[in-house]
Image: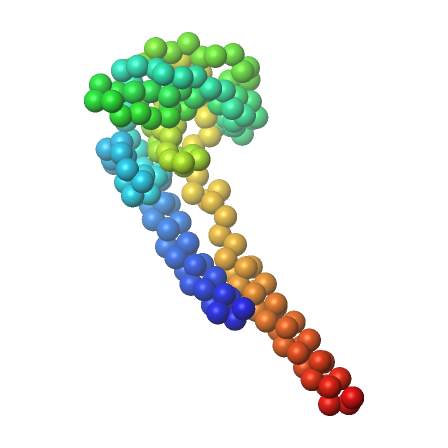
Length: 172
C-alpha cells in the first residue's frame, strides 16, 4: 500500500508536467497537423489545427456549453478529407438540438480530447452556430495526491489493526 502511495505521488508529478505542456499548447497560436495516430493525438491536444472536410459522414448533437458558459447543444459532425482520414468536428453551440446544416469545407480550431481520440472544436464556429466553450486543460482532474494520501491511510490503518491483533494475542 505504501508503494501504491509512492506510485501515486510519481503520477502526480507526471500529470503536472502533462498539464503544463497542455497549458502551453493552449496559449500557442501555432497550428499543428491534424493527428493521425494515438501518439500524435497526445502531442496535438490543445493545439490549433485545421481539417478540410471533403465529405460529412455523420451528424450528432450532444449536451454542450457555449463560450459564455450557457448550457445547450454541441453540434458535431464526422468528416472525411480527400485522403480518407476522418475527424470529429464540433461545429458550434446552439440552444436547440436541431441538426446543423453543413456540407463540409476547411475548418480551423483547437484540438480537444474526446472518447477514443480527438475532436476539432471549430473557431470560428460553422453552420451559423455560436462558439462552443474551448477545450481547457484545467478541466482535467489531477487527484493523484489525494489518492496517495488514501493509500498511506490504508497502510496506517492496516498497521493499527495488525498492532491490535498482536496485542490481543500477547494478552491471550
